[in-house]
Length: 170
Image 1 (cartoon, rainbow, N blue to C red):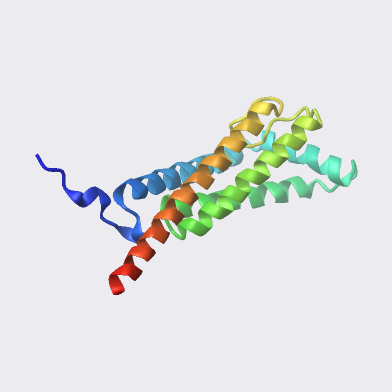
Image 2 (tube, one colour):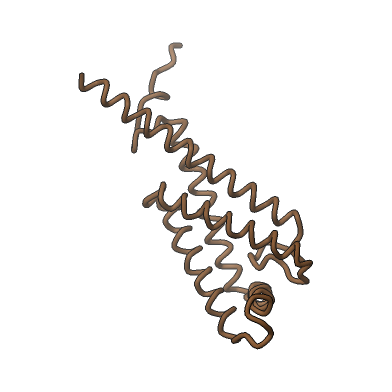
């Protein structure tokens, strides 16, 4: 039986079916993970607040305001929910993936800082353990790299689609 050429036909945004599946799965995975992480923080904020209180004390000194960790957690949860819902619903995917990659880079840097400080607190993300470890840093690097991979697939497919359309004009 002859295979149809539909696997290579461009669809929404110039992505062929394979690229579209990679972008859809990546967006869905990262979006779901961000929403779940936000829900875990809201359901049990103690780990996140303990981590942010530790960081605030290290950065601002022991006399820091108790509002800093609460405000920081509120901002993090809000950003995770907005990014997560945007990725799941595929709204402004490229921009949201770029912001998500920056969020993962920030998380990785924060985890590395906690590990170097030998902090007695977990990652604060709702998925971690008692104390931040190199496994948290590796997890952040994997998430960052995978997110960048989805961005690259999406961008290459879009460029190829635009080049093909320009060739068809002439």
